[in-house]
Amino acid sequence: MNGTDGDRRPPEAEGSRPPHGPAGLTRFRRLPLRSRLALLTAVAVAFAVALSAAACWLITRDRLTEQLDTTLSTVEVNSDYVQAISALCAGQPLNVRFQPTPYTIQLVTPAGSVCTSPSKSPIPAQRTDQAVAAGRLAGAVHTTKDENGTEMRVSTVPYHGPVTDALGGRLAISVAAPMDQVTDPLNQLALVLLIVAGVGVLGAATAGLWVARAALTPVDRLTAAVEHVARTQDLTIRIPADGEDEIARLSRSFNAMTAALAASRDLQQQLIADAGHELRTPLTSLRTNIDLLERSERSGRPIPAADKEALLASVKAQMGELAALIGDLQVLSRPPETGAGGGTPAARVVALHDIAGAALDRARLRGPSLTFTADLGAWYVRAEPAALERAVVNLLDNAVKFSPPGGTVEVRLAGGALTVRDHGPGIPPDELPHVFERFWRSPSARSLPGSGLGLSIVARTAEQAGGGVRLRNAPGGGTEALLTLPGAPTPPPDIPGPGPGPGPEAGEAGAAEG
Image 1: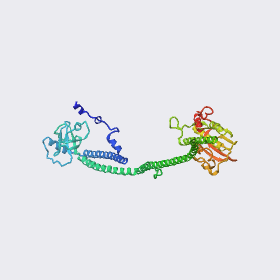
Image 2: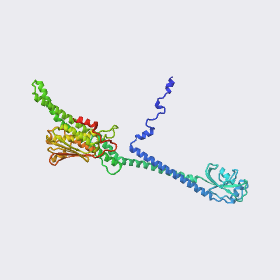
Image 3: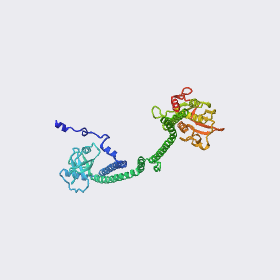
Image 4: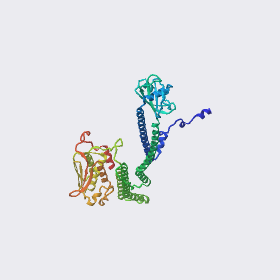
């Protein structure tokens, strides 16, 4: 039992693999980027140098061997030399002096017998040599070893000259030379190539490390800038971006991103500050009125009915103003609506004339003493229905607010331009550039209800729909608002009928507005 438990190994020891591949690849991935680039450069250069060295070595070997074969094939052996070798092998040496030669010359018979020149080591005959002697081959060249183990290059050709053949039958003559004529230069070349390749790989690794370091310097600057922003939240930092390469484009993109983030943060802080300022007034008024009611109840001194009713009306009005302000802030703070998939805006083709008509019905309820004239031509746009109706309602509310009792509000829609004109006091020219700013209110209108966000919502909606909005003083007095949206007087083929109404989204917007 104990022996079995002792032989049992944990699962990790039984050939388990690292979760992310081989250990070598994992260690490589953990290296810094510049080290990986230098290593990859060295490996690539080493591979290229190895291929080049191998090709050079093989080509040189073939050329040297071919040169040796050519030399062996041009060696001429005269008949007297052949006859002397044959007589020597037959035991009847002739009175011939053999001249020293670097070649080994021997006679080969079809049976494989050989007769070698004096002072040379015999070379065993190969089958190709026998085939040449028998007349089946015109010649043969091969590499073999002599009886002393020396590697020899052998060239064998048939012999047809006059000779007293002591071995009998046909003959072939083999001329051989040591292969060290080829192998020695090859060994020297291999050593030179090895040294050159080693130096080249080391140089490539050094150059790769230097190139990687130089190429990654902008990345290091970018990394330091990102870490600085994450550590200090300082969005004013900028990275120098010279050139048109990928690093320069990345630096410019980073600069643009930090600039956009800084602008967004500034707008957010400004929005919070402005919202706090606007909230302070109704909250102060609410606190004052509630304190009066509480003090009356605590002291037992009832407030006159008319004054109490006025206080409650003021509290209700301030609460309504707070609710409207919070609703406007929510509209400005949320991104554009998205479809069911969550990735595309929920804009669709809607009839602007129908939305303007629905907004006019609501405006008539808010200004019962005013006269509304409407001339609404057909116009279809692509926008978010709820946001578009809210924008039109805001324009009409602005006209209702500044129109004198019994005045007229003129609404006209033609060619994608919705015009809303009132006959109120108008806007001073120096205040026109500020009318679309958040929380901005004309000094002459600060006593009127409103949050100063209505026209900002109109401008944002128009921009999202690809259009624009502007205000100007109308001839003869009053203010004229012009909302322009791209579209067409006829609906696209996929929209049946004259165009849908505002839809449920608009109803929700109207409920929120009310």
